[in-house]
Length: 99
Ligand code: SF4
Image 1 (cartoon, helix red, strand yellow):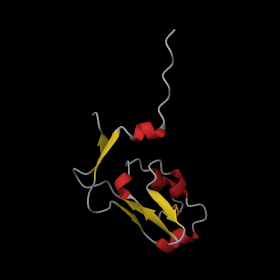
Image 2 (cartoon, protein in one colour):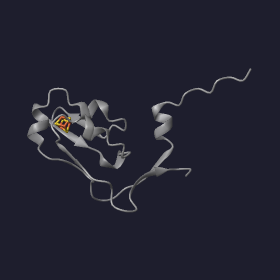
Image 3 (tube, rainbow, N blue to C red):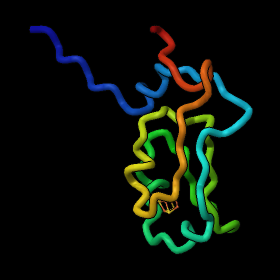
Image 4 (cartoon, rainbow, N blue to C red):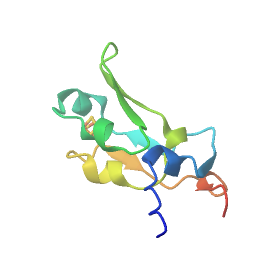
């Protein structure tokens, strides 16, 4: 009997992607003060690509837009609609390596 294939890890799946980075971000936080008061910071825990990281010493969310996989999760997770997200400009962003 054939062995069941192992499910792919998130890291394996992210490894299938390639990025063409723009010099300008396609993600903006509208108000840093809102993030300060946001109790759970779900963008920092729910983004599968780790784009949003809470920087405790600086007391702010750091956005690594270059890692964005364009899934849209952050906009759904933010309870304050504090994330302005637009698709990357034409020719930039994420794609599959073996497309
Ligand atoms: S979920 Fe929204 S308000 Fe909360 S830390 Fe993230 S961007 Fe800021």
